[in-house]
Each structure stands twice: as C-alpha cells, then as structure tokens.
Image 1 (tube, rainbow, N blue to C red):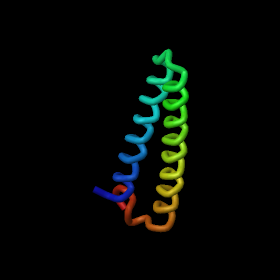
Image 2: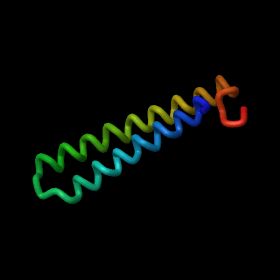
Image 3: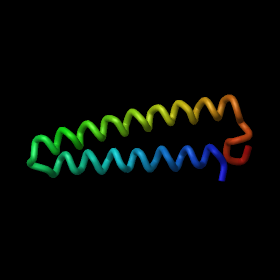
Length: 69
C-alpha cells in the first residue's frame, strides 16, 4: 500500500467521522451536546483539510509514493 493510498484512507476516515458528528448534532435536542458535536465536526474538517494539503505536498515532492508511481 502506497503512502498516497494510506493518506487517502485516513482522509476518508476523518471525513466520515466529521459527517457522523454533523449527524449527531442534527439529531440531538441537547444544546450542549449539539455544540460539542459541531465543534468536533469543525475540528475534523480542519484535520482533513490539513491532510489533503500534506498529501498534495507528498505527491509533488515524492512522486514515487503515488499509486502506480
């Protein structure tokens, strides 16, 4: 498994977790829990964005780590 593939999987997992937090926020009546879920979703979205940037850097600097590279 390439580094690029591992990064793609990590990003997908983080995006999935963020989506779950957004779902939980939409389903709860507890305002404190809603705020917690929303904050977690924002944190996870930010982490996914940072990993995407890192993935782009890796692809540009180290093309041997790309799939088929």
